[in-house]
Length: 192
Image (cartoon, rainbow, N blue to C red; front, side, top):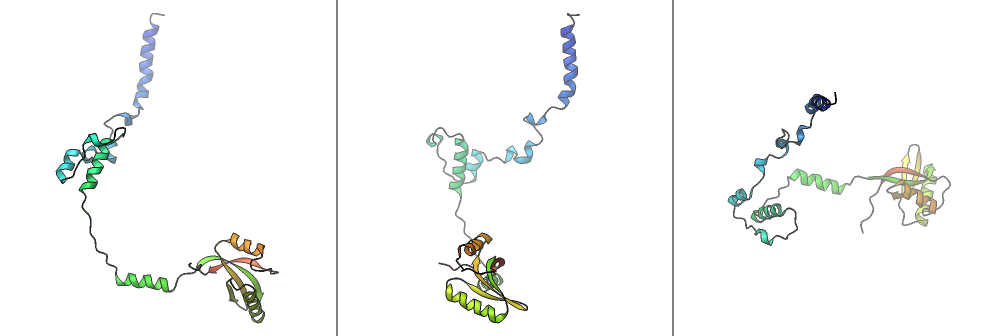
């Protein structure tokens, strides 16, 4: 029996490996069907074809610093760049597009942000609150917003809720009893 054991192992190994070879990876071969999908070898520019296209000046390989891993690729790229001609173009802008551009500049869209509402109530009191705020804080923006049948006085132009809450907490807009941060369309910041 021990004489036939190596033969039995060889036959058993061939029988076991037969189904396994049917599932081998075919992508490890050099002639895989998928290799032509990405960049066929015929489309790779060769040095002879590049020289026949124009009159590029190609540096000899001795002038390329040693230690570069792709000296041939660098030489080909250098020859393509040197043979390129400067391009010219003309710019034509349709009059309708120029009109749309000028309309947007004349009437800019408001920016979504946050304001601090310091008062909400009747018109007479809202006007008094707005006048008092403008007197105490002339550098801050202040708006009177109608919300039927009442009016709200909002102050500031803040891009995010944290800036508005910080201004309210630190007292940059004064101390108001029922002040709250509300989302609102804000004015664009002034250009400096």
